[in-house]
Length: 424
Image (cartoon, rainbow, N blue to C red; front, top):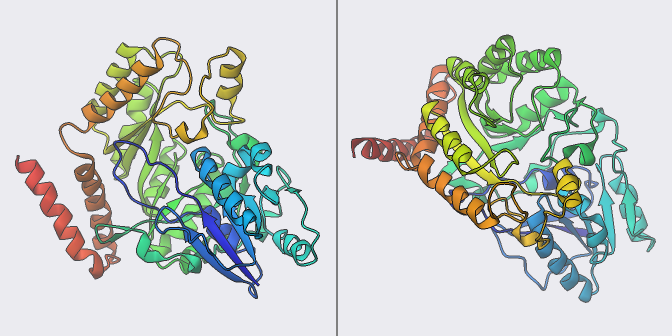
């Protein structure tokens, strides 16, 4: 039996350097497929999907809202050829009712210990329309090492530098942030994986540079300290979402190989300034994530915020426009007041305004979004700022003897480019 697993393409953010990270959802799902089944994986962001595929079952894994129109298009095509299609992942779960109209089956929730039963139904011709495990998580110790062997690693590099490998140490999030759908998708209970399982997976990854994609590394101080102590000997270098703002935790993270963090910056307060400085003091880089279009944002506020980012010398900044994704708290509020005007999911790329902001027109918000990218990167282009972050990780690797020679040529090129920019 053969399963073809497809990860649909989507429009990339305008203004952002284009690269492809290896997707995480598909490799976690593939690990739940029995070993005696052949699995073919196609990441449509890197390779075209052959429309004449010869396979027994199509599985479509999606993460983003803006992937869904393409996911439905692919599903309809293969069903028209008589091939059964099952959909799953974050995107399919957020858009479950619409997705059901285009597929033979939809899987909601986490697949560990469950997908073999779906395949039994498929073989016996009893495939159900819905397999609903949403917010009924499997035992967290059933989550094993992701099946990264399905990936074509040649697709995941940028200018000769291998992209980060994605891994997770926990699931669930106790927070319920205003623009986020995570509470709906995974529940509000923090579910840490057994630390020995995390270590086992990190050791199995043939890449020294990782992205720990947990929703938040700010949920349980004691667990964080134990995790960081356990992974320190591995000498991996990693990126993550925000880390608990605590001196002991940040020091432990730095020792454990924290390279840089994605840090939400939502105001120009001394609190944010101190938080950024604390990370810098421990040698950790920062890529600020800045959400534009909140109800307290007017044109003056956004311009002041961008100037603040330059003042505190962020390594990188990623600007996005507030987007009302299904099942997020913001969406309920905007819907209630009739402020969402665009439900064409292909536009939900976070660089377009699909709602009416409180203090400006949608067009003005998009104009300020473009202005923010241009202004922040006016003194040093995005690629050069990224080179500065790579210089940081390479210095860390040289210090602990993990720098890989195969990257040196690409590194010299990047550093040469950086010096040329600085000399201008």
